[in-house]
Image (cartoon, rainbow, N blue to C red; front, side, top):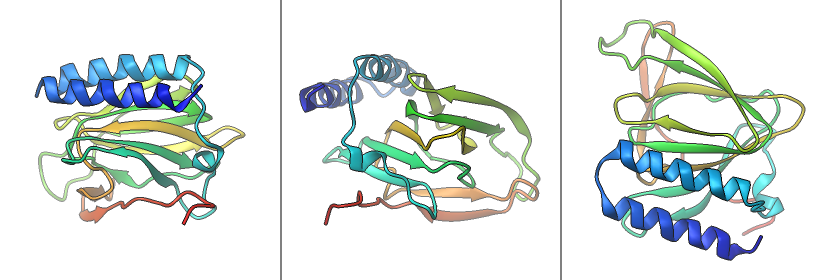
Length: 188
């Protein structure tokens, strides 16, 4: 598929984000469009599917000029996992390749209290999920299976520059972090 497919997806999401403030409506509509993009046979450039041996990486595909939303390619090597974290915004994730296990937690309402597990789910190639809304936003992700996991993620803000929470699930202790953006291998 050509980059026009991704360009059309970016135009559609920009229109959706500008059309309503209802994040449930936005995530539902973005999820439908992301499902269609993944089903269309769209191919990411190879350098955006390469994992790091040290940690998962976030490659920017598009950042809205006003930071109202961003599109990322997130890559985990086999067995890599994120810390338990929040996003502080809505998000939709689609699996481009590999398998992801998501471990969800209830958003804490009492500081410094152990988190309550809320279940886990596995997502494989072509599957799309609303990974977060502002009121349901705490999880960890691990790449499982025999190949790296590559996801295409859409967030309701600039996920690379936003302050987010990392949680110790046993104590509920919070540390704030900014994930940043990674440069794809082979690019300067």
